[in-house]
Length: 95
Image (tube, rainbow, N blue to C red):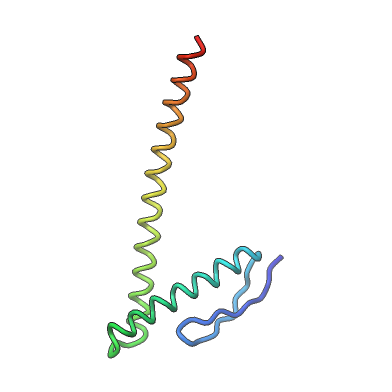
């Protein structure tokens, strides 16, 4: 069940629709993460324009997402390898 929510990023409210309570939770956590990162950039670069700081936040988030995908792909490969080893072990002991 979709629900209308409001998320605040960089002091501005954004009306959004969350498809589920879980998605709402994720959206709110993401907004908190973006705002925390923006605050760190505000402290490090007080004279930099907001749009530039938001671009840094977006880049940082995208890099983190790519790194997580790559790590996940590596884990999937390791899991498949372990499954093959387990199957080979069980097949060997079953004979």
